[in-house]
Every structure is written in C-alpha cells, then in structure tokens.
Amino acid sequence: MEKIRYATLKDSERITELFNSNKKLWGDNNIGYDVDDIKHYIKTDLDEMIVYESNKEIVGVMLAQFWTDFVHLQTLIVDRKYRNKGIGGKLMRHLNKISRKRGKNLIEIDVEVNNDGMRRFLLRRKFKRGKSFAYYSKSI
Ligand SMILES: CC(C)(COP(=O)(O)OP(=O)(O)OC[C@H]1O[C@@H](n2cnc3c(N)ncnc32)[C@H](O)[C@@H]1OP(=O)(O)O)[C@@H](O)C(=O)NCCC(=O)NCCS
Image (cartoon, rainbow, N blue to C red; front, side, top):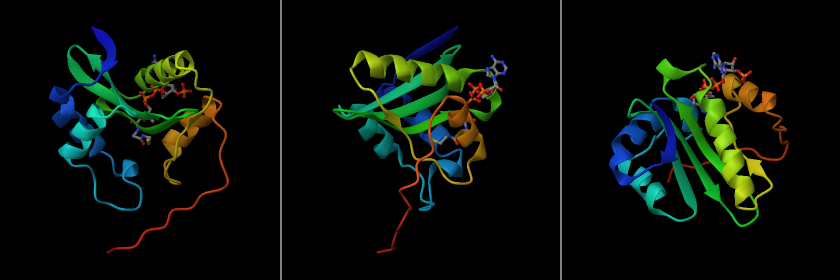
C-alpha cells in the first residue's frame, strides 16, 4: 500500500539514512546530517517533513519550509531502488497541493550544479532556473 503522510519522530533514523545516502544533498560542506537535525526539522512549525510509504517502508522523503509568502523545498529524495516509478513526481504534486491550500504561490529550491537528474526533473515540471546565487563557505 502506498501512502503520503507527515513524518513523526519514530521515522528519524530512516529519514537520516535517506538524507545521507546521496552526497548531492549536502552541497559543498560534505558534512552530512545528524539524526538530531532531522528530529529538529520534524518538530519545528516552519518545516514540514513528508514521507512516501510503500508497504510501511519509507522510500521517499521531502522537507520544505513554509514561509509566509513562499515555500522553500529543501530536500526531495527517493530511495535508489524506487526511483523512476513516479514517486518523486507524486511528492512534488503533493507539495504543490498543500502549498496552494496554504495560500503560497511560489516554490523555490537550490540544486547542486552537477545534479543533472534533479535539474531535469525540475525543468520538466516548469521550474525556472535562477541566475543570482553562488555558494560561499569558510572552515572555522
Ligand atoms: C530527483 C528524484 C527525487 C526523482 O525521484 P523519482 O521518484 O525517481 O522521480 P519520478 O519517478 O517521479 O520521475 C523521474 C522519471 O521517472 C519516470 N517515471 C515517472 N513515472 C513513472 C512511472 N509511473 N513508471 C515508470 N517511470 C516513470 C519518468 O521518466 C520521470 O521523468 P519525468 O520527469 O519526465 O516525469 C530522485 O532521482 C532522487 O532521489 N535523486 C537523488 C536525490 C536528489 O538529488 N534530490 C534533489 C536534491 S534536493
């Protein structure tokens, strides 16, 4: 059985595993996610962590911040074994639906420049590529 639902704290370990399964999600910092970060995202009001369940196993996850006037999609990831079956597309449609319901009219996302798969995925869904930002960091 397939189901899209909000994550609970019980899902934290599995979600951390998915977040850390793909370095393209980390950006330049190469540090990865700690389970406490994931728990924090699940608990806070600004963030929505939404999972896709197939036969009670979490095979996809999406994290988005719902700001007053727009939605920032921070992460969308589908377990490698379950890709190209339409799950990412269903999660995106779900995000569109709940965003419109909450009165938001923009969804934005930052994507690693070499992440061709995600870039194609977004372009096919009519996302426009921005021109304004570059990433800076400094070890401290
Ligand atoms: C990008 C990503 C989330 C897409 O997830 P996905 O579940 O594979 O996405 P979908 O299956 O919905 O779409 C991918 C392609 O699969 C194919 N597809 C879609 N539905 C299908 C179905 N029912 N049967 C077979 N193939 C299908 C299509 O070719 C589709 O391409 P489209 O964009 O033209 O629709 C996934 O590749 C991923 O997790 N990547 C790594 C993490 C990542 O980089 N995330 C982005 C950074 S935040």
